[in-house]
Length: 227
Image 1 (cartoon, helix red, strand yellow):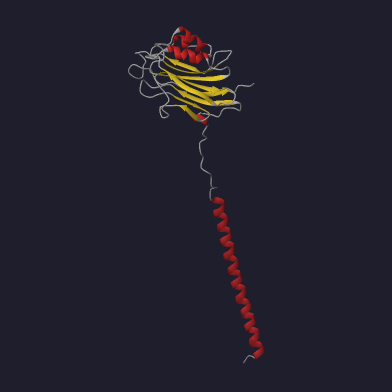
Image 2 (image 1 turned 120 degrees about the vertical axis):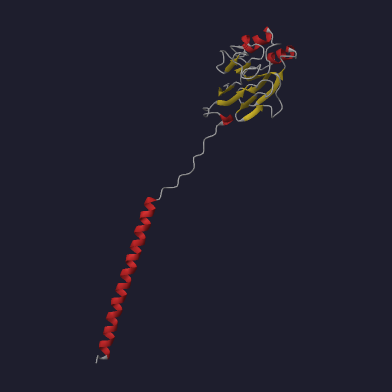
């Protein structure tokens, strides 16, 4: 028969033995969990933020450099949809704004600040060219001038009006004819011909619409006027 002291020693040894086994299993489980977690962490792809396409002023394809005004301009479509003129992400003329009309649509902008001065349109089919000539003569120096046609821009456009527009930087206004489409950005006091001008002739062979050519669109960056 075992003595009481021997029994206690045996119990102590067995307890230590089972405790060591328990701790060993706990340690193995911890390492296994740690390793599996590390594997999953390494194998999971990093979250990538969704790519949002950049949007530039007036919907341009790229941003304008500093010291330039962003613009986009579209002529009218036949006699149905009016022209649209945007500057620095502000729609200055459009059918939605209800400030466009048949003939030549025109926007005047301060060449230093980009602030809107005036918008107007002149009917060159049934209207009088005299008010348009007066308007052109009163444009202040340093003003950015934007024009877009709608329906017919040329029937009443006489030689004097064409000369005044040519002085704003136009190269093609003298060849503008009945129902041609034309868009233009120039300026009062400009010393050279503007690079911002497009013209498409009204031709039965090439017209997109019955009796009218296709819509013209143009975008670009206007240099800010420096004093």
